[in-house]
Image (cartoon, rainbow, N blue to C red; front, side, top):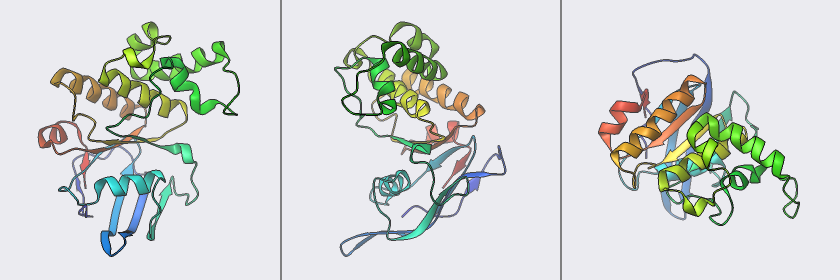
Length: 220
């Protein structure tokens, strides 16, 4: 279970954008989380630490709404019934459709009906604006490329852009650097720092303490 105490190096804002209090979760007779607490400020890069089996990924899934919690509460900007789009998860196994273009993948959450035709102009406008927040170069050259043609770190950028396009204020990244090179990792961290300056918060799960020391404002 993640240790509920916090070690804070820097405070960027007084308001907590996310608060998870007393989270409980069991799978059958196995208690995975017992009274786990987590608070993230707006524009903060927050590292979640713990050994294998400590419940880090379970806590992320509970916060994102993909797992039900047995006890405790979760609030976004003080609301217990937050907008589902306020939190977005980027897992190691990316949830993109490789045969669709970069623009189509970013725009998919905006479709009102599953079988509705895509408006190409609207699709590209929304996608370009979102991806430019992450990587302007990629936004300029790759919107019409199939996602399958991108490198892994570029696909992560597309996932982050899609989350921002949907209104995410908190990004949950589960071991995002596990398959990245050093230069790709540095590029990703530069993006997360830039988003933090714009008020976007990140919860980062990583086993690499050097990365945590270099990037995180707060550790839980």
